[in-house]
Image 1 (cartoon, chains in turn yellow, blue):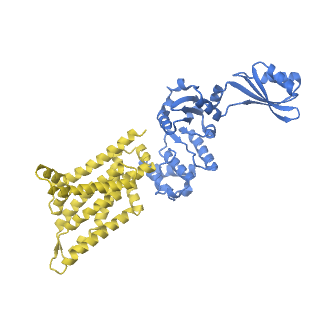
Image 2 (spheres, helix red, strand yellow):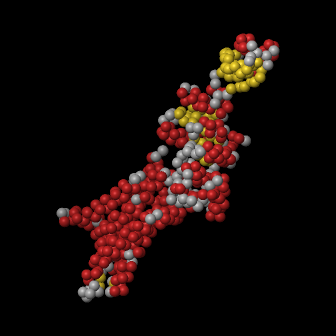
Image 3 (cartoon, rainbow over the protein chains, first blue to last red):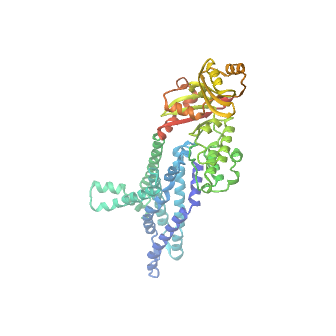
Length: 240
Length: 276
């Protein structure tokens, strides 16, 4: 597992992908940060709730994470290197978890880079640290489930493009579920609220850390990883 | 090792082989030694620092070969290991395969008959998913041919030589092939299967006082054997050998081959146990 993890991480950082994605992410984050905070400077508002920025940034994850994860299994399958992994003594769950951890590490690096913004706030104003931390926790959990989902779309296709588009589009639709709320009521509304990623994520942004939300994201991540394992195991037995 | 070896093209040869040995759980202390031994054997030491993507097909093939050797497997399955290599590389790879055959069991799948005759000690021919022959090349050749065929170069008058040859017991057909010199002709003699006519021919010619300049027994080449076996419904040893251990290893392989080509396939095997 460790060997897979190390190899994957190397692949990310030897190619421009990790740098480009981190760069775009921090750039967009910075522009948004600037546009939100600049007007408030000098207007006596020293306190800025940082969680809101992270909430906005999470929309970008919908695009960036599938690009990060698109190659993980699709490329492996296209080049035939999947055979090498499958015939090695490493088990499929180990392969999947190793690859997940590597992609997750890249995501954490991206996220860590955004830490300059709360630092800027704390220098020039007052940062509500508890809110920033809880927002980051939610952001990381959300990111983990996105990464797991990205791995899943990558595992079901041979083409990286399809994996990325499928990932982005599906995550986008999951986002849109929230928009349905204005049309429904009662039990249906409750179901959507419970299933909505952003309902759960919002709790963290509002400085509410509850076990329920943590379990939601962790189990979501686990579920997609298990799906990846099933997809790969299935292929292993069905392809002669 | 498949025809197109599974390579991570964005790694250097060193990194790749290290990764594979980690993957195959080779002990850390032995890792470097094993990798450099294998690289030495396959002559890829000089490209160890280069990206696999930038290597030629021949080098890639050998890196893939190196990958298969890591961990010292007992059985190596090679699918067309010399495809896309230049003649020098082909010879090199074949000699490596021969060397490896001393310690490993190698199952080699190929369409190239010269390769089979160069490296293999036991041949399995598969036609449309069915094993049609299992034997050594020599036995196969004998089993297939309906006649034994001899070639003589005899110095003497043509018509009397032909007459004398035809009078020999067991000879079915005599053909004059070509004129070599004045009064020297090459004769192709087909005799009944398993009948060696060389001795009687010698005495017959001695009686006439015609010297035999050259005698040759003709064996069927592998290519002919292959054509014979795959175009007709003959089977050599296929039934009796089916239950044997070594063929059972090939069963999954054979399925795959049949799917890919849906036609005639040749598989050959070098087995160290057979050598001794």
